[in-house]
Length: 97
Length: 97
Image (cartoon, rainbow over all chains, first blue to last red; front, side):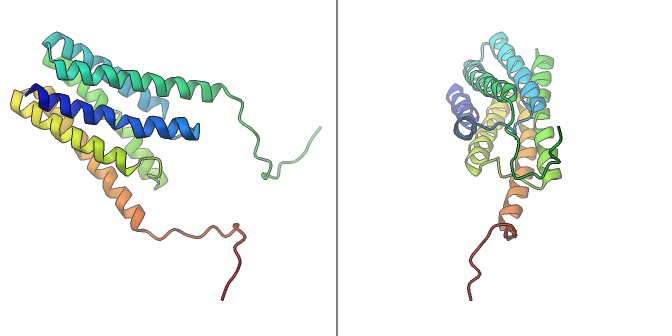
């Protein structure tokens, strides 16, 4: 039984790797909204607590690692949001004083 | 205890709503890779089986609804992939015979 849970966890946690690598490679987390990260992060913390309280190894392992991934993406996103956006030169803006 | 799991599930499942609505509104699922959907979908099915076998209501409810969301996004993505891409008129392509 636990192995089924561990396999499920490995997949749902592992599915974050392509997204994590894509965000890392493209330096863009634009399509991952803060709402999504906040909801998911809170839910994962609660699943982790639920796993700890029920002593469910599969839940603890899966949600522990997923939490690590999510905090990494959130870190990238906050650094990206802090970085000044380069104005798009092709956009024809009225050059004023 | 179950209420903790149900709350966790409501959050991790609910977090798919902004992503689902965004994909629906923008008609674009480009930033959700097939690898991600395939890994996640398989993992969620296994979590559902794990929940059914252990009689865990929170796991069953959360993963049942999440599976519904994921299949909806996959449906949008497959229709989008099937739709012919409109060539970008501004791209200066060599007009051939």
